Amino acid sequence: MQSTIPLQVLVIVLLLGANNGGCLGANGFTTDGRLLHHRRSAESVALASSSSESPIVAEANLINSESPTILTIDNLLSEEDINTAMKYIKMECVNTTTTSDYQEDIFRAGAEEEEDSHFVAAVDRALSKGIGLNPPLVRGDIPMAHTDSPLEQFLWVITNHAEAMDQADIVTGANFIQRRQARQKWESEGGRQLLELSMDDEPFAKAGKRYEMPNEVKDMLIQKIVRRMMPITIRWSIQDATVVMYDEGESQVPHVDSCDATILIYLDDGRATLEDIHDLTRLEGGETCFPFVDCRVPVKVGTALLFFSSTPPPSGERDVASLHHGGLVKSGKKAVAQIMLDLSYEGQTNDFARSSSNASWLDILSLSCT
Image 1: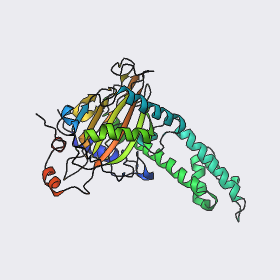
Image 2: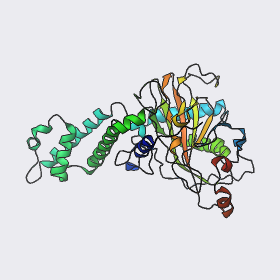
Image 3: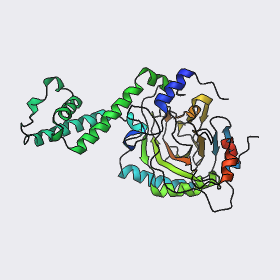
Image 4: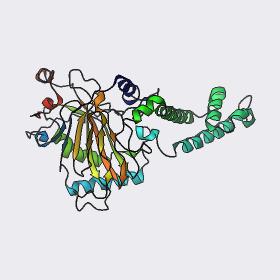
């Protein structure tokens, strides 16, 4: 049953937890520090299928029929599918760094030390270039008051001798400054109140690691899950596709996705092998939590979770009740693939417009509540 959202909490969520766009082309924070799950540039592909096969939502486990609509479907991936996906994902984790502009990165361990190193190096490069200026820029020009702060030195050089600073250093530094400003938002009174919405018993300490989803995995999940879960008569566009890896002690801050629908596919619960994909003894915690409807969806490898973060058409407004977070992993590991979708109105028929008016997401999915 959905609980009433206090007005004060609603305001905080809207200020910190949901937005329609982000800075840096980023999923994590806007120029004023508001948190979101950003939608990257939408792929211009419609997910409408030419198959006559009906969506399998009739097989779904309906978790919440009202706002927000939440359902799961079990056993959508075989053990072979999961092993294949995890092979590509682990290669991605080894060969690439984590994302740098998502909500998890606001809380990334060691971020401030790495940023300070950049500020120091950027100032050193500016000083090397500044020797040729007239008058020359030398280290002694930087006020002593900034000696202990790499950020303040960086800002002083930009403010007083921007011509000596490389453009790439300025852009990177600006991104780092925005991350710190976003972190400060979470440390404010409003941010602390939003963090208190978490369903975990322990306070948030550390976020999981997010990676871009390998194309091989995305193609497989589109074919085996997205096309099967979503109505074949409706066009959906993919807004974002990532993978989040959680270790023990990691979780996620409460947030609202800035898309219509999110599909989470549970791929790993931390075992060395997947001989028994139903044995979850190695993982404790890690549920996907929806505080406003008092709902915890447990991790079950091969299961897909579908929920909606907007109200159905024609309004399409952000549904604050969909606020959610990845629960604390108390032991073991967790891997989850995330695909964010928007309902695409381009190319939809007039029949769709008429049939979707005042319909629920369950109606649109052709799933009966009864």
